[in-house]
Length: 488
Image (cartoon, rainbow, N blue to C red; front, side, top):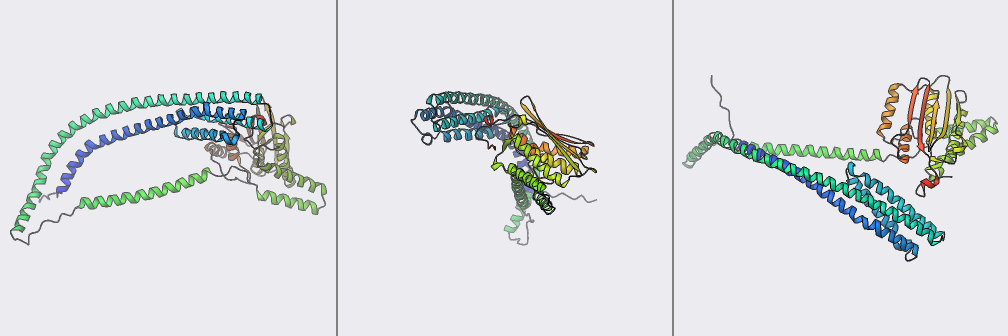
């Protein structure tokens, strides 16, 4: 049996040896360099953040209170002092550094940013007092509050710097350990590489020498005039393969970048979906049709009642663009909605509203109850044979307001309830669900965002119906301040 000799490439043998040596020596070096560069970058970033925060301290403690004093004393006007610009610059800088800071160190900056908002509120008070020609002594009291708040912000900035210093110290220790480990690994790898090089050179020398000798013999015969001799065709396949691989890699990278850009655009679109209420045109059309029917039937009182309810519904829905309304208006809003819907679903729907007038002057985020009532009607009462009842209740518990919307509809299956809670847990704003309004997911998200709460809606459902409830802290006009839009 003839033994077929396996062909070998001279360049391949040399390249294989060099590649192995390079991989053994370079990869650990590259890894260690990457690690060191990574820690160096984190260290540098931390230093830059600390320097940036440190540069704000004088602005917060000296410049802003000084500008406030100049305004109170009449040395400067508000535009001349540029005090709001200084405050906003500090706030934007803190927000920028907060975005660049890890979760473990950003709490102080978050609190500092909120405290700067308090400082700005005091400056607003000084402005209002000056416009109202309040005695200077009152503004001097407010100035004391400004200085106290500025000192508090300075303390928070100091806390952040201290936390960053501790993090930097830990990074420095980690970097030293990485350097020691990589140095030891490099020494060991160099010893192994030298042994591997000596053994590989001996094995490669024989395989390389034969093709070179054949090439010399063929070249010598050609030089002597034997022009028919040919050197075996040795195409540089390594370069061809390398070119092919590089092109393949470039094509794949391009496809990945395009996909990444598409994903990023889709993510931005998803995150920027509006949280504002959407008026359901079918609700408006059906209500207008009902008014026309009542008018044709000569039911004057019913026409007046429906028209008044529709007017109240849309007036409160719009609220001149305000986000916060008195509870009495929210109650009136759902009363108008239920009156209109009862005209359409008189035979299958009844309702009860149990919200005492004693809590009517407290403020709440608008359009929290109506979407829950709408959900109870369309997904509870309508789908149950024989109809049912919707009960809306509200009560005061210590410093909290507790609301619930209960229906005696068909309820949800455990799978439906689990899926709904999972969507609410994700916290992604969506366009209007079902028959209009915000939908439970968006109401849940609005409660969490506006009230700064970890949880929003609580949902319980069974064959006997569904109860959707939520608990929010009391809000007054004084607590919300001038930065929130309030109706009524």
